[in-house]
Image 1 (cartoon, rainbow, N blue to C red):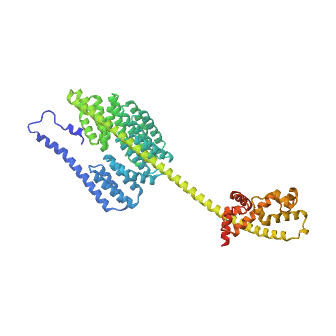
Image 2: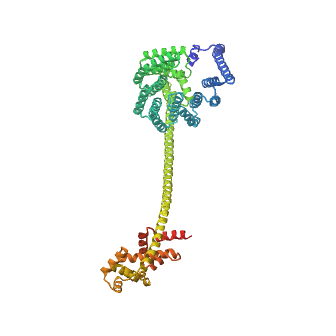
Length: 602
């Protein structure tokens, strides 16, 4: 029994001398059915609890679900509902039934949202969404539908806390994800979330664009059941959004469009479900919007026709929480009609409900309308007090929104700062990893190069040693040959060589070519030809070769000498000159030769 039925039972005129005689039957008439209903509800809950304990398997999970549903529609405390849901989730996890695991987790978030338990909701949100996405990604199933329902709920809570920037940012991120997955339900849900966020930010043109885009995306969903459910959700919330902005004509046009979706829903439920389960709620939502829109346009005859349809539907089904929306539509009708006697009790009910639900914006709007009613009924003091309360409430809302936006921006800044720091750390790590990789590669190249160079130097050393021994043998043979058997050029070459070797003349840094020619009694041209015929080299080249041979002997036989001493003792003007000549002649530096020679000497 609602408050209108209670009002109709009040006696007319003044009360008799003994009022309790009339009030007692009335109280019994009211209390007894309520007590019986409460007792019946409690008996059903107890029966479901016993069933949960007695049955096993999938029947146990179904009993859990029914119990949680009954508790959510009762006056059970939040703790009692959560305890039942935790038990439901634990059993679903034990049996590994994914649909019930998803249902229990989504149910928990729904209960927290309806109780305005923001901290608890957002604490559970990541785990729930992670589970739903992991078990529904890439599929058109219950898990993904539940996933986007949690996204929608989170968006609404962000907006209720004034965190519109966070809501927009989060919806945009998830939209990109849904778009990459080509998930029409997800894209439709997230564009709708963006529409709500932009509306709260008073960016109405953007909001309108996203509302319409959300409807267009929902129309393209292939699975009939998902498409119908998505369209109904969008139409009802889109319509309420229009009514909040008093766009009455646009609301009527949307309701005409909505009628086609309701017809599709009715056809589906007749064919598949067998009963009009959700269609009645869709018709009710549409009729309530029509009442409010017609009332705002002062078209009271059409509004009354819709009111009669609502009353007929109320006789067919108990709409439970929807009674508040019914009262809201009937209040709008009475208010615009200026039937303040009918509007006042409805207004009182709505104020109590919105205060209980902590909805300050709705309370402020109702207080302003209450002040109008009081002003029209000559209750000026009450009207002034109502206006003051409404103004204070709106100021507190603006301050709260401003504070929430600052906190939201601060949170976004902190998140961006952390993200940037993580990105910098990632870049530093990659740079360090790249540097380490390059060092490892350089080390590997150096090791390979060193090994190859070592093998090459060993081969060169062996060739040098072989050449050194052959040159010793060749020198001995040439020196010991009879002069009369040699040609004049060879005789001159042998004389030239013997002169150089006598007293180690070739080792002198002051060796003069012209003095050699005078001592040999020849001219420069004959000597050049003789040296070339005997060695195939120039005079300077031959002297340099003798010096290098001697230096090679010093390196081989005298490891105690420094390289500089070897260079000077072998007739070279400096170590650098000796280094260049030795490296060019033998393919390795004097240091490398000595190192290899020492190794072989061991």
